Each structure stands twice: as C-alpha cells, then as structure tokens.
Length: 438
Image 1 (cartoon, one colour):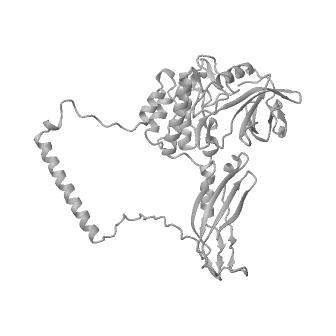
Image 2 (tube, helix red, strand yellow; image 1 turned 135 degrees about the vertical axis):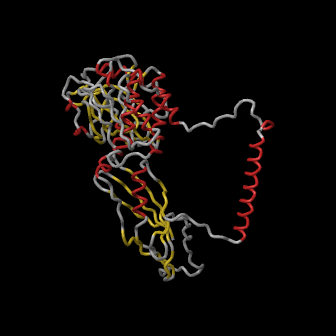
Image 3 (cartoon, helix red, strand yellow; image 1 turned 90 degrees about the vertical axis):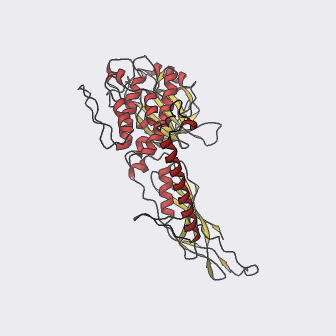
C-alpha cells in the first residue's frame, strides 16, 4: 500500500488517546506500511481485548480500504479474524481510518524466529489456512498479503487477517517495495487466487525452515525449495512456486496432497465366493499363526513375564501424586499443630527475548503442583494453560523445579498442593504462589 502522507503520522505515543469517542488506545502493538496497530477494548463486552488498526485518512488507497472493509464485515468463517467495527476518527490534526478486529495472542511471525514448525504443526496450520482461502476465493476475494505476520492464533484457533482483502480481478495494492510473498505477476497483472497460492508456497517454506526460499525476482528462475523440507510439503511448495500462474497448483491440489492415501477397493467381480485357491491357503495359514500368537500371549501372561523395550527406550509412567495427608481427628488444635508450608526456592522461566517482545499485554498461565513431604514437586499440571502453548510449556517446566518447605501436621511433614500463577509481560515474569492445602 502506498500512502500520500508521511508514514510516521501514526505514532506510538498516542497510547491513552481515544478514537471516535469509542476506542481507547491502550498499548502500542506495532506498525508497518504507514499504519499502526494498538490494543483496545470493545465497549459493552467487559474486558474483551481487541486490536485497532489506524491508517491516514488521506492515504492514496483510503477509499479502497473502506470498500474492502465493507465487504469484510459480511464474512463469517472460523479461520478468519472477525472485523468488529470500522470508521473515521481524528487525533490532533491527523485524520484517520480505523478497523477494529479480534486480538491475536500469537502471530506466526513471532514464533518462527524461535523455532520452525514441526511437520504436524505445519499440516494443522495448512489445513486451517486452506479452508480460509477457499472460503475467500469462493466469495470472489483474494487475501493478497498471505505471510507469517498475517497468520494469527486467537483462542487456540489459527486465523488469517482480514483488514486488507482484495476483490479478485482488480489491481493489487502493494507496499512501496515488493517482497518475496508477492507473486511474479503482481507487478503488471491484476490480482488473482493464484497469487495467494504463491504466497502459500513461500510461507510453507518459511514455516519449516525459519527462512523464505531463495529467489531473485529479476530472473526467470523459480525459487529454490530446500532439500531438507519433508514430503509432501516439498512437492507442495514447489508446485505453488511456479513463476507462471497458469502452471501453479490449486488449493484443491494442495488439499489432495495432504490427504492420507485412500485404500484401493477390490476389483469388480472379486468376491468372497471366488477367492483363488492359493489365496484361501494363505488365509488359513494366517489364521493358524494368529491362533498361535494368542496362545503364546496367554502363556506369557500366566507366567507374568515383564515386558522388554528396545535399547535406549524408556517406559514413562504417570504416577498419581499421593493425596494430601489429613490430621487425625482431635489432634489439630489451636496451639499450631498444623503449620502451613512455604516456598524455599523459585525457578523462573527462561523466556527468549524475541518471544518476550511478542507479548501483547500479559500472558497468564496457572499451574497446580503437588508437593511431597520432602518439599519436592511430585506432580505438576495445568489449571489454566492460557492462550500460548509456548509460554504454557515454559511455566510447566519451571514449576516442576520449585522447592518448598513442607507443610506440617503435629510436627510431621505432609503433602500439600500449591497454585502457581505465572504472569508473562514484556518487561518481566512474575509468579504468585498460593498454598491450596492442607
């Protein structure tokens, strides 16, 4: 998107100002392309967080934004960000357009600097993105800006941004400099669903390797897909990144490659009554072998044979924590027979700087730990994992290493249960411990 006014018109120090008399700018989230995004709250929804995007009202394509937002408000799909409100406002002498959308707890672009996605995570992400793009294309729309920074997580659901959609067949809107996510035809041709397929290929490579593919727009060569990418993702990326849009695969092609192989039906006419003699013999032999295996299993069970595991493999059992010990009736008195425990050693999560910078507001995770009579954590589980799997995992790992001064009943150490409330912010991590029992 090219804007006629200075991109610094949207300022991070506007925190505390109010847009259109309705939306208070609570926190600066970030900005690009002349726009800026702030945290705000929806009126009449308690403390429901939302994101408000501001762009200059005299932007070159301001009217196109207004028209696009009008179409977006009619959309409804579980993997598209909801657009709540749009309108005009002003701060000081700056005229503004705004769009209020759902607030994303995580953004793919903030995860990839820390680690690539696993193949299973990539498949899950692709499934959701494909559903959303198919829905848009069916409505005659093109996303036009598919990339990691526009793939969000809201309430543990993958969603695409919706504040800059395009009508298919119209000239595309671009930032001052095209990037690798923009298809080769973006320079001269109108935008089409094939452009989203190209962007999907670039995003797929980046999700699995943490880097977009190598590509020189000035040449006729197609991007290089790294050999390290596993199948079927390597083939999908290669087919998405064809320079000629007519040779690119479709969204349906991508879905077909992701589906597991279907079982092949029996040839027509081959029924149970016409099984060849050789096959009947094989079936009988297989049945005898199964019977022998069952008899052997019963004999082993009767002799209580311990299972064996391959070298290097460990059998991991989840042992339930012992229930908190209760004092014998009549022994707990007002002279202090029951003594509460205390925290002896805290362990704080080691948050990567890039992950901490991605926090918008505060991420809360609550862990319930069971403490044995020795003061060690014998079990840790989520009371509330919060919106982020990354921060939830950090909190759980840290909680498992806490040490406590055990609670006592009549001078004897007993088990206890503690609630650890982790609060992750950009500036620091805080933990509030509360003893739940005894």
